[in-house]
Image 1: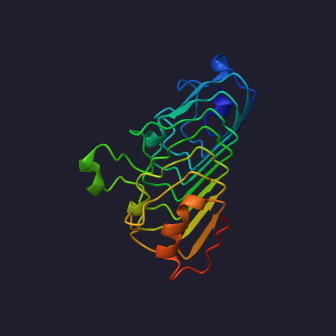
Image 2: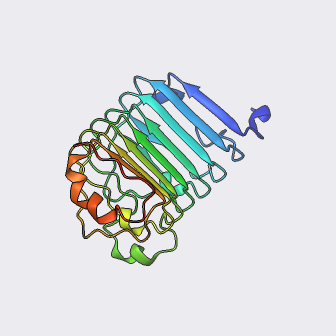
Image 3: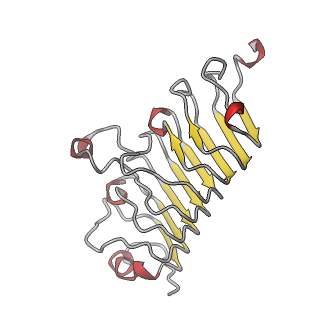
Length: 208
């Protein structure tokens, strides 16, 4: 395993539970991790040792119900989760403060995506909150109803919400800043919120 000690990029395909790399050999130098096309894996655990990880991509993990340990990834800048139909986030989950870009797509049973831990009020002023998030893209999440903490993203520049038919953000959930670019398509319950934030946006699309 000595040749893995300086590994920076790792792609894993068709994983089962026993295939998951343990923190015994997982290199601390890893910067990009991609996990793809698992039909068996149910829980994806991220080791605290991955302090150098900058990009995490999880695709087509059909039975994954949770991703544990995201808050341990102190250097994570980009998170992409796609085609994980059973994925859920606990209300107590929150994203690492280093995150700049978040993409979640085709997660049909995802009902809430906490952008911060809203159940610990002491965390509202915590510097570890994900206020560095600049790009948020949520696509084809048909059961998504809430994005807790969206209004606390003080660096948000781009917001894309597509085909989330029951997603609703109250008009009084004011954004800390108006993103430069907003696209909202096929999200009929977002109409009132769109009217509140049309002014100042480069473009807002709305298709009822």
